[in-house]
View 1: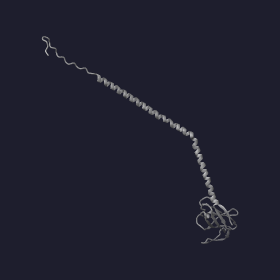
View 2: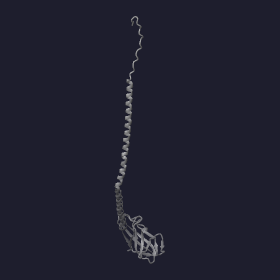
View 3: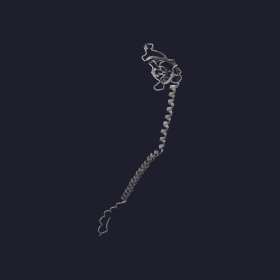
View 4: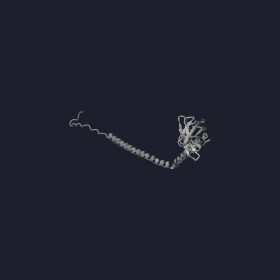
Length: 221
């Protein structure tokens, strides 16, 4: 470009520096504020959730206390149950006892022969001589009229004198071995060594097949 004559040429001016816009800075500050607010809200929400959770756990803790007190209120119910249980047991026990007694005393028939006496006793394998004075022997016939077996062995019998003295038996011969079953009959020949003046009145018999039972006095014929 030409300049007019006589006028100094203007020095070229450097281009103006463009001004930096601050819009990005403002946007960054705004985003930071929003992020800070979001963090604060999140922390506050977490705190409220923790508090509400603690409050929920504390609430049921009072329920067990209520349930314990409620368990104390119906204390009368356990007291009633033990009182009923013994009543049932006590009812069962008496019903069994009479059945055993009736088995021992009323479930058989017995017949005893007249006694025979002697100073010697032939057992089949040997002849024995009395040491106390004399031998007394009887025959007993037993019939089982019950529903259980009744015992038949030497230990179930004794001899009873007129004065109440009992004599243990020293020898016996039985028609069967073991108990007498229901509906069956058996016989036993029984012997005891007694004083010379003894007078036999009855034979006692205990029909129980096991320990216990009551003896029954059967008069001699």
